[in-house]
Amino acid sequence: MDHRRNRSTLALAVLSLLGEAERYGEGALHPYRMQQLIKERGKDEVVNVGQRASLYRTIERLEKAGLVHAARTAQDPGRPERTLYALTEQGRVVWREWMLDVLATPGRDFPEFPAAIAFIPLLTPQDVREQLDRRAAALRTKLSRMDEKSEEVAWLPMFLALESEYQRAALVFELDWVTAVLADLASGSLTWDEQWLRAQGEPRHRSARAARADHPAR
Image (cartoon, rainbow, N blue to C red; front, top):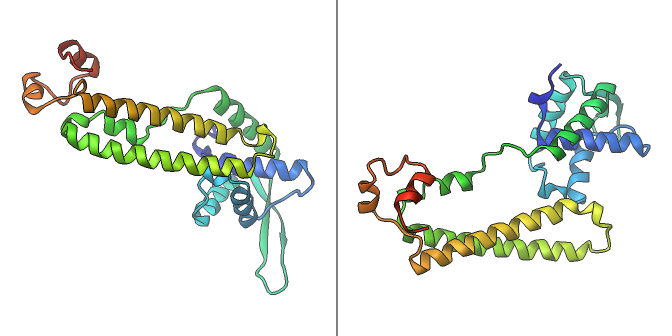
């Protein structure tokens, strides 16, 4: 059975937490406990568990696919009965396959920011400059918060915070790139206007490579 359609960041996190629970004796977990663990460890920076309903839907899909199963129920005094989930044998196999594939294969993601960059000639250089200024400020704020969090958990072994190191490196790269583009916009080495775009014949549909061949600006 092809389980790729069931794969998501949240599904990978669920299988990982259940694998960890199995390995270290807890055995099975309730969805609320999974959400707690992700937040307590700061993993909600990379796994979106803001909506518990999404977590329940993900677990339901994994159960239908035979990757997790309802292991047992538990009930605290004055609380409703809870279902605790555990990995199936197939779930263990698929978890490992997903982990190895994600680590080895660059994903084909389609973030909004590069898509917007692809169509910036529809805006004026001034519009772009103003919005990138705002983005740079937001990136600096985010980087500052990330560094504060890193200081709080500096005692942890590096392997427990590798995703934060990765995120920080990506954030620094993006900030450097945005800063460089802002400098080019400010100097005028990166610019365009309606007249030049119209002169190209197909201004908003040409490839960047073709445009660079005709236009001296970056």
